[in-house]
Image 1 (spheres, rainbow, N blue to C red):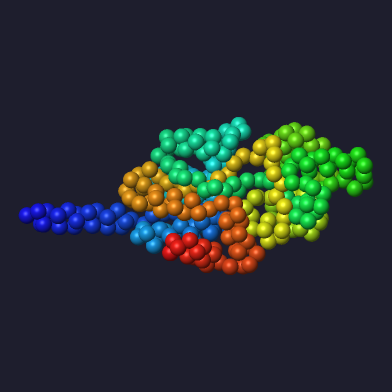
Image 2: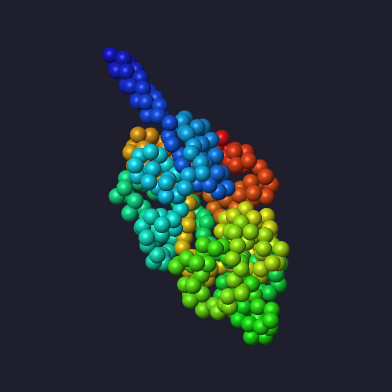
Length: 299
């Protein structure tokens, strides 16, 4: 009788497990390299763990957010700064931990769970040619501003040029408050506005002296750029984090642990190298993700 009861319990558990994993999990990711890699990595690893996953790539941020709340998708990789500023309209400066705790608390009201954030920060920063930055002893934003001021006073005909994307140059939380925070005086001709993707080439080729970049972009490593430290903490933290609907987590035992395992493998150096393999070395996100997971013995 005990044997029969044990077998019945095992069969019931197996049936429940098969039902839990029967419905495909919908994963939404955005339309840039880093997110394509995260999508491929998540799909491959979760499939290895027995989950069925349907990826939806190139989904706009706001559309993805609404679809999560409306239970049309199950999970995504979101950035703390995006949730803080875009979704919750909070522009107060916070530490990375404060940002994470704030968005986690606010999104709980919508039935969304922020799991463990990766130890990475895909935020704005200024970058220079590495050789030049090291030759001129510039490693922080404050040191760059001091150099700009020195050139302004000693060689006004050869002012520094800064490359910026159009959005940041005109945003209310963009260039103007940045200048105030760092007491950075600039004449209008010193600001060169261009497509975000062209900024990296402009810095590499010396068309501008420094440019606004994303810290985990593969071209930072591929073009050997020096990312300057934001020593006044102006730019918000953008830690990428798995965000999952609460009911999805409850219906899929093991999903939280699996996603936390993935996020624990990521940091700025890792994701920048993976981005470089796609953007500079022209490997596919799927191959890059597969090679990385194998190197970590996760496949």
